[in-house]
Amino acid sequence: MEHRIVIDNDCLARAGITCMACRDACPEAAIAMRPRIGGPFLPVLDEDICTGCGACVAPCPGQAISLAPLEVLHEA
Image 1 (cartoon, rainbow, N blue to C red):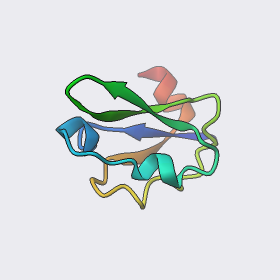
Image 2 (tube, rainbow, N blue to C red):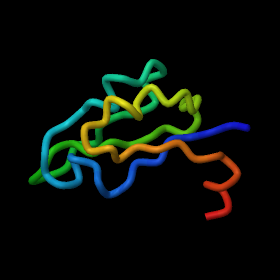
Image 3 (tube, rainbow, N blue to C red):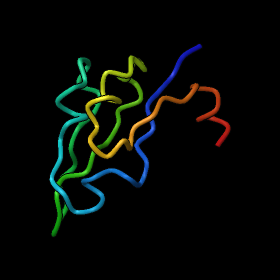
């Protein structure tokens, strides 16, 4: 079963705190940081590159990343 990551609203960057832990931990470079005006860059997942390995889950200081089965994500 394939998995992909989900970044929820507990993400520190979404709370205005600069963090790039997920991007730095991703061995596939599937997480990029999108610039925004007035706040830190936001993580953006490239689903075509993400292998669902979970390397970004543990380093996330906000515990905002989880793995979800791919078919569940497409049903939502």
